[in-house]
Image 1 (cartoon, rainbow, N blue to C red):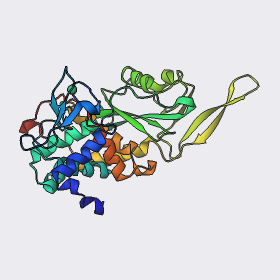
Image 2 (cartoon, helix red, strand yellow):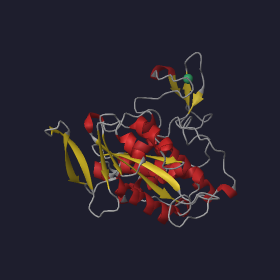
Image 3 (cartoon, rainbow, N blue to C red):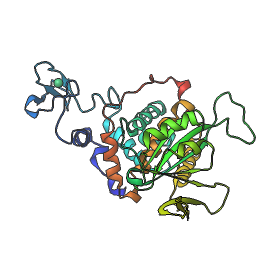
Image 4 (cartoon, rainbow, N blue to C red):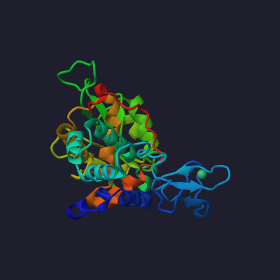
Length: 332
Ligand SMILES: [Zn+2]
């Protein structure tokens, strides 16, 4: 990170723009208006009459101008690209997140602008579209819920978590990658469609002993359960061998430490320590942030630089569905 801070992309707008162009347009420039990627039909506009970094699309139906930020989460921002990239690197390198107050002080831009910029970067971290199913070829996928924050207007209950937001996470043991969802509650109606849509039927499903997983688990090749109340946790693996009565032999195995719970632990420490308050409507964006860092973490061989590249690629084509916030919406 030390050498990184000296990188001109944090001081020089041209360097910042070229860095971004190289990542957004890996295979050459693309017109964001019509999709034209024919380099012979794209002209760089130069000279005093033009802002730097403006291109002309020469496709006869289109003929529009564009820059690398058109149709990205950076579009129409007055914040210099050098600051955007500094925020991008800070967010990708901070394992438990970094607060808007901290970034605001470090970059010298207003708190309000920082808050909005960071939510746009979280949006860029969100994985859109259809993803391949987890746990294909019989791999193990852990499914678990955790509870965080407060739901507005729901009284704090002593024993259960009804006053908290429910997060459902799926973790693929083979790839080490996680997908998290903010769900209304931990019921079959909420959980089953997500599990079915994201996990292969070949998978070895691993859950706790909650009732919601009994029927659901039977839809998968294997279903092992762990008991949260025990110190040592085990799961039952159904083997290919058969007992004399024809039923498969089940082996009980100790669960490894690299589980979904370690993901929840980073997420919770980050949310409590760094973000403190998070309203319900923004929770999915924080989940995208923690999922992104987990799925591009150092332990998977991803460097800080590669993680930043990955995020830069994610800025394209994301639309923000909320309006520019006024100050009363500025809580995290
Ligand atoms: Zn075009």
